[in-house]
Image (cartoon, rainbow, N blue to C red):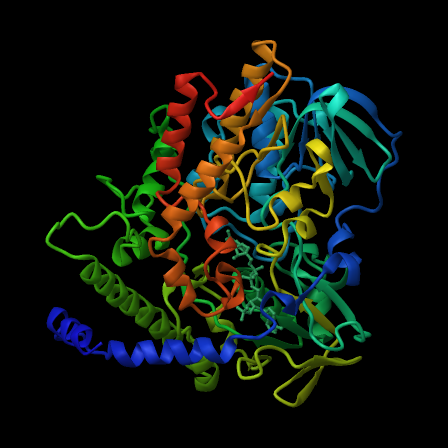
Length: 612
Ligand code: NDP
């Protein structure tokens, strides 16, 4: 340790801050938030609060229809961006005999459900909104707001004629392989029986609202909802604000992640009193949104969107690039911190320890700026400013970007309540929220507590998938995900999943989903055009991929996350060997993953799949 301290000092003699002191502060702040119950602190919304997840506040009621009893080629489950992309890419290849099954009343997934005031995507719209070239759409701004994104999902649906393929307001209850007919039987809550040769499970990584198991949570007698089911009947207004019904209301918001950062400025502007209960502050960077320059947009050459997405991914992973095309908060952080610890530096004289130290120091500098921004933006309330400073490394939690959130705490009607010492809100009563021994009586509690991203997969999708020999997919994955390329599993013939595990992960999720959809549609088309009945991943191919994922995951990301403040990135601080390594993405990143899939397709022998 003494050697490392000396090395730090030699490398950075004039830092102006003490890295050792920052390390100690980060560790102390982490430790005070670690809970023994880890992920178990979150209760199962399905069982305890079914209305939080299953209610749809955006439609009056379920529109009636007869149960469907059909034989089709493909059943796609989910009509968020992943299901939409699967549908679009299938149609592109001429596969039209499919149904998309979706619980919402329209396309959009995340963007169907999340309509809270201020909802916006933090990934540049030119990268995030898929199929811009195909649909000829120009996003209004560099960062799109939720209504524009939701509208784009409908545009894609219309462009590819997907409405006629989709069963909305329909929840799948079971997916079961029927060996004698070599098809899947998909059952739904509407009594449908859909027999499909292929199933594409596109249920999304953040589909299920997450609720903290705060003692007394069920006793509350006031109004309450989760941010992903925003109740505009109660608040008044819409996505752009005007929450005028709150003028005489006391509101509590629990949670200060990416969602709360966007919604709180609107609540602060309209509520009579607003209490924001914060366990861990987010890192809030500059947003600086801009209108799209029409001339620039029109001048883009065909193929520009893919090139831009790949460039974005390359910059984020510290891979080779000539120009940072996106040039925003994400890429600024990535370039400065050099998050690619596997792609060593161009300077071959640097050893791994030095690369790590340089990355850590750049991180400290970046986070010092973020903390400095808090002081600048919250001059009126020194106590709040102090509590709003994040003490962890930048990528321990999803970075956020917003230009109004911090300043909201200067308002006299807004109070920040730091609940970090108690590891969260203490209790909910009939009348309100108890924190630090004080009961805050409120008219409404809004849960901005996020989504079940790392809880058990079956709990998140809420239906079972039963493969060959009656095996549940979730038993097959009991010790961690088992797939080839994150897309299909042994024992589950003609079955795909589009998602975030064991494949090329990117914060630009739509790009990932699109690339996986391209691959899925290729395989479906190959099986159909070769007059085959089934494909199934061999056990060997699945084993090899799992081993590769684990071997690559061991290179640093896990160690990094272990030192992080708790959150869903590190399973509430419980990251370790075993399943978490196995559930990792493909460490070389999305561009490398896509070129691997491309080569696999180009070879044309469907390697690793047994065919019949
Ligand atoms: P998060 O999971 O990021 O945040 C949940 C919040 O609830 C955290 O602040 C958490 O605190 C807090 N919390 C949980 N339990 C308690 C408790 N018992 N007492 C007090 N506080 C508690 O959810 P979000 O909805 O904000 O975001 C989820 C994800 O959705 C994001 O990470 C992002 O991936 C995506 N998203 C993306 C956006 C975009 O721009 N693309 C915008 C919004 C969301 P703690 O941190 O201490 O656990």
